[in-house]
Image (cartoon, rainbow, N blue to C red; front, side, top):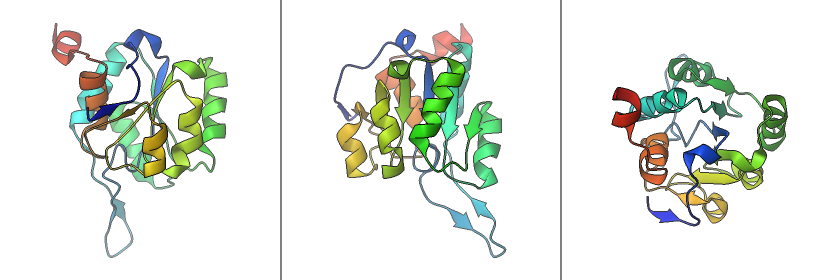
Length: 171
């Protein structure tokens, strides 16, 4: 972890994790082929991190303005819910918290760009990749050492929250 602006929470104090997609679970780049099909790059290291969250029964969500099916396909592979094609992340987050009966102060939000700003500010915990927009770095509880798409979720769980993947997954 590059910089922690506040003491990291204990995993028991987190109701759910909410992740932006582009720039957090991806490197924020898109490849477009000659017929317009998009593809992105994600870190396989994050796959184990989502296995850990499932094992600990902590819900995780992708919250994305992106309309492309790549978001839902990645979420399906990670076995988490994707809420996508939304215009206002903050409003959608508030609705999710109400429906699931979470405590907003116990939500850990991970974003990287200005469309995450209000949602991040509303949550009790937040983090952003190293290559995030400066305004996001200014409000994040923690700034990670990894860039978007380089194992952000893994770094949060192993380095910031000090979870032992071997103990949780293989003991």
